[in-house]
Length: 273
Picture 1 (cartoon, one colour):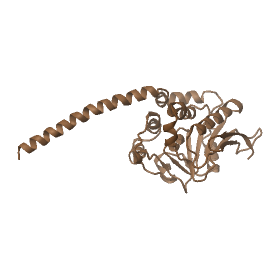
Picture 2: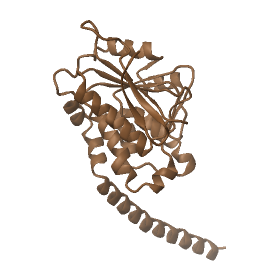
Picture 3: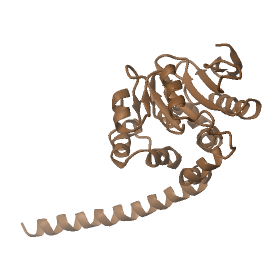
Picture 4: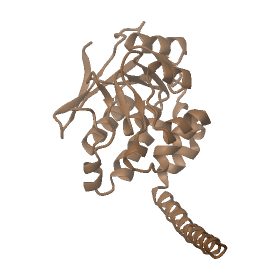
């Protein structure tokens, strides 16, 4: 497949390459395959995110409407999520970069399909969920939100997409058990729409009849309305932080109250001995 365009990922020497896996011509549909390769495991850094958003911008503004597929050029990983050192050292990383990538995919005015060829952990799993459809390798790779295991709480835009798209029991298993989902488990849980590789992804596009769904020009608007609660969470970063502060304050008050109640109970218990 000849490249339609390439966007470099400066920080790693990687790139995002756009190809048309179905070919060109009047009898061909416009399917755009974005293959990102950012060694060693496609971390969602500012450079990666800038490149990804630019690639989506190029498709929207320079090519006919169609369907966008994203996948990894690294066999083992779709994406290993955030680099926590980079997050800590980059002022405004969440609202200036990560939330903007989530927003762009959530509201993109064409159908988007995530082809999960390898592991998608933490932020990589979130990125997959912000696509409209997901296809997972049935033989290798896991989907997992493992923040619970290393003590990093999820903020609103990280959590809300799972709440919106998954049934409650799967949502619980993803977040509170940090469960790893292989392909068959993901399909059974409703996380992905199909199993396979590129051929199966193209078949999903054909079978779901989504090739021309963006032609009327309202596909993005429909998604904005459909996911308005998620979108509000992305756009109101300061509001989310203020809500968390209020929750922490209330939690602190309740903790003090419950601690005093335990102390009183212990005191009374000893007095009865």
